Image (cartoon, rainbow, N blue to C red; front, side, top):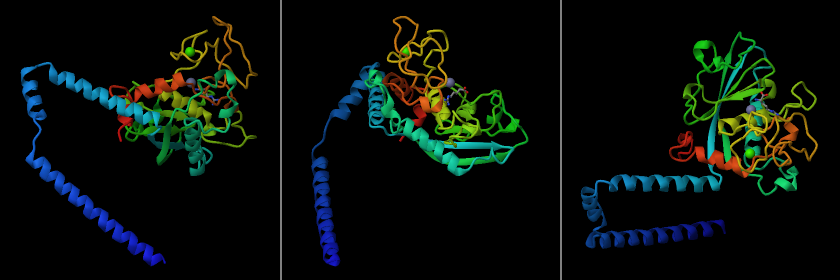
Length: 318
Ligand code: ARG
Ligand code: ZN
Ligand code: CA
């Protein structure tokens, strides 16, 4: 029975290929006989009209942007991730399992696949977003060091200073895992900075999903990277880094200041209009278990950086 099906399928394939060939042949003969003058007319117009070339280039730019915007709506931007591990102790030399757990969290949080996404209050359900960006572990680079902490002056990103230079930073997201010190969980570089220092640094204790009872709690669910990658994708803190400051996103309410811990809902702002604060947004400072959404306005800011002329256009290429 299997054989019959196979040969039948083969016959059908042969038949359809032949048919296709015939069509192609016919097309070729047709196009060879007739001709279309559009290209000649265009060439003449380009010669006669000095502004036309620039105008057509603009149309191409627009077309490319529309293609990319469409691609993003369908959720197909995929970012290769290079993880640079700088370790002195065995604990700092985190396992591949630990690394993959962080990639998994990024994929969940940026694709509305996090299990707590349904905890977003009804008040914000109209603006909660599926950002639609995926992350793929590209490579892990490990290097032993004698440094016990790296600080925030980017030494960890420089081979000459004992760290590791980024790998292909215009097409790959570089993450550095190393002890930062000073109670800092992580830090990111915003779009627009130097390629040589582009990426995100995370302390190994807060990289990936770690035990609920360990010393990483309450930053044990990998959301430090979600927050920092948010910055890397041009998102500001939700309180705008000032009292009732502006995060440049219209659908996030004004927050007085950063929120910590796991605030009880609703938490009211004292800013103009006393809105309910979106404390569950990844760009606040709450505990990992208390942050579980980006907003549509934040997604729009992210999408813009991948368009032609945008700072992360090089990541949007097929
Ligand atoms: N840059 C912030 C810090 O180092 C990260 C805050 C992340 N918050 C979190 N729940 N993981 O303090
Ligand atoms: Zn931050
Ligand atoms: Ca806002």
